[in-house]
Image (cartoon, rainbow, N blue to C red):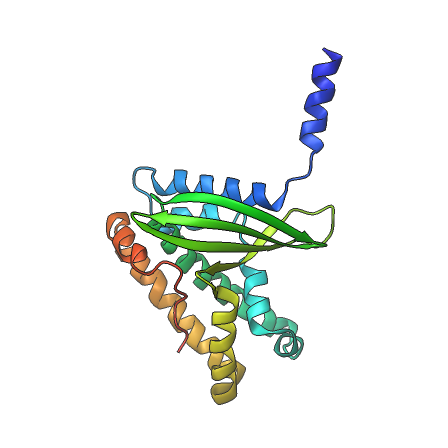
Length: 211
């Protein structure tokens, strides 16, 4: 009895590795995506448990630009981008619901990590790498970037943000993102899960353009 209790305690205290986060996250997404009546909204609630959309948005903005924002601007930007990312990421997840995932190596350097995977959709194989971080050794690992076939979500958004900031400034960027978020959320609300699967499967890995 004592031995079994000790074993259970040790297992409960064992650290959750980046690879385990990605594996359990993918399993939860596939389970939710294949559930009857799956929608982008229901998937978004599952995805945000292991993907830190706020951190993704912050890194895409860039340290210099982020430091130049007021606390109110940071909150407005983060809230807007989180809504946009939740909708687009969940839409893509539904499209990948039937995909087979092969897990590769896990690389950890301090509080940053990368997990390599390969996604097989029908006869196509696509490398998908997950970037994770944690604020300290005592906190959970969270995904902040997804690199699909060498295309990074953070880098893609970062490039778009720089162009808009140069021409329209922060207010113009925020207006553009809010418009894109509203458009995507309306589209998702009006689209059935079946049609989302067809749409998302053809746009795997693509970040919505913030023009």
